[in-house]
Every structure is written in C-alpha cells, then in structure tokens.
Length: 137
Image (tube, rainbow, N blue to C red; front, side):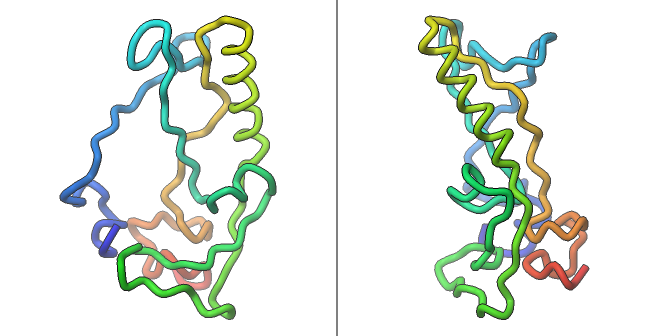
C-alpha cells in the first residue's frame, strides 16, 4: 500500500493481486482448494506483526502504514503494541500439518478473518484519522 487512500479502500490498489475468498464448508473447514486433494491457502492476520503472531499475544509495531519505498520506521516514542492471535495461528498450523501427515487432505479452520485496524484501537482503518497511531481516531 502506497497511500492512505489505498489503506482506506484496498480495491484502489492498481496492481493488487486478486485472491479469491474461500468459504468454509458446512463443517467449518476449508480444504480441496484450488482443486480436489490439495489445500493451498493464504491466511492473513490483522492486526498483526510478522513472526510474533506465531509465538506471543502482543507485537510491537515499528513501521507505519502506508508502506512504500520512502516509509521510515516509527520513532521509539511512536511505536505501539497490538494484540495477536497466536493460539489460533498455532492451532490452525498444527491441524493442517497433522491432517497432511495422517494422509488426509489438509484442512484450515479456527481462524477469524482479519480486521483492518492496523493500530488495534477499535477504529477501522477506513475511518481512522491516523491508522498508525492508536491515540488518534
């Protein structure tokens, strides 16, 4: 994302990679996508911090949005923490691998859709005056 307009409305990203949404089946599982016998998905967390979302309940955000070539890191006084759903991430990965090792088509389940609230302040990025500052709404 290069501009705040793209943060507020991601459909405006000119080179956005279109990824289909895949809904769970009646038992709440995602599998057999993009074809029968295979499960290949991208799972996104939000808010989130790379890697930390796999091992801890909070993460330190040190870069603001929008991300672009000229984005500088936040001054340490402006950095903030966000909640991370690491338990759900671990459970999802564990089930996926366990299914595969058991000879089944791997399933993805138990993961909530991401929320576009980068600073985790309860105000959606689309309407947040400064989505990189949890003190500003």
